[in-house]
Image 1 (tube, rainbow over the protein chains, first blue to last red):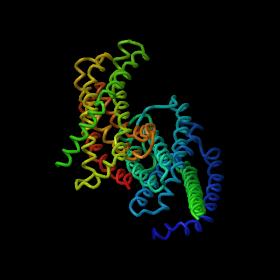
Image 2 (cartoon, rainbow over the protein chains, first blue to last red):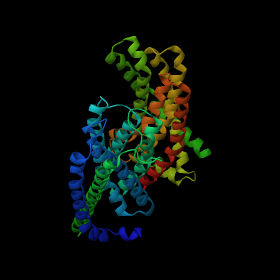
Image 3 (cartoon, each protein chain N blue to C red):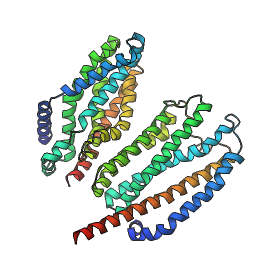
Length: 240
Length: 216
């Protein structure tokens, strides 16, 4: 199953229509989700209108971790089965994940200023999220520093797998250090703690972020594959 | 086991010949000296900020030793010899880390005592500070082995190593500085020891995997 999609030729054919489809779906979901979240959803009884930042903050936080987990899986596949496409996917995902992590930090800070009365607080969740952002930057920098792409891919994959240790720390940070950031309110044993009227826009926005990631990922991968082809063609032209 | 001992001895000799802990110690003391200059010599302020700042100076001093850790082995062919050896590379990397701990981290931990006293830490807390620095050094080196291994082929990789390694320094810094500041010392030292053991156990495995790729 895996090897069916691991063929770059087949991937190029598939992504030629799948990437625009995913981006169109993202545009549609944003077109529904943004007005729903920012205008038509109810204001919170305590937080008032500021709660609307959550509809950007929470999906960005979820998918910054989701993208890292995806990179971890791609790195593992790239290391074990030496699939070029897995290496390309891990590298292509990193800037998107870093942007989501940065968006999560910025929106959280904007929300914290009126709600908590501080732009930043060194609690477990915020600190581990900042660590995730820095790990993304280190991963991208390592890729850029090594010229040999195969070696860069595998060294970056090792770094990515080591960094996976941060994901459970982020998830459970609110339980281990009970400080300012609120604990889990959606994935809980007792059922979700947020009102159903807020679930709709939240999950629409989460879906929009996911489609955006999938679309951008495929675009990034396509340009990486095309760049490799151009380079190898140039090498062949130079050799003859 | 003899391969471990031989590598350990060789690395001790090499590191000692390369100046030992002199440069990291100088870096450490220089960095701590700047603290009261920047903050002003107020006693109450230094008492609170001193132990954490000693910790940060020690972390940066160890970080500065990582860049060259595997580069010389890669350049002069020692790494190929290590790969040819019948001993697992993980064990040899562990020996290198242990040697670095003895030559750099241990003297830094001991230098933490005068540094902490100069920053007005209470005398009775100094043994805890030294012990926490010794444990923290092991955690930093375990993580640092991975950073040094993945960047071994990069010219002037110092900034890159820092970017890669510093987020993983966070857990030992949190609990180490807490122990050094005298907050809940028993629990903090236990978690710090856990960080050190985990990093010393897993770091060489990941570092060896990266070094095998470097030698290809």
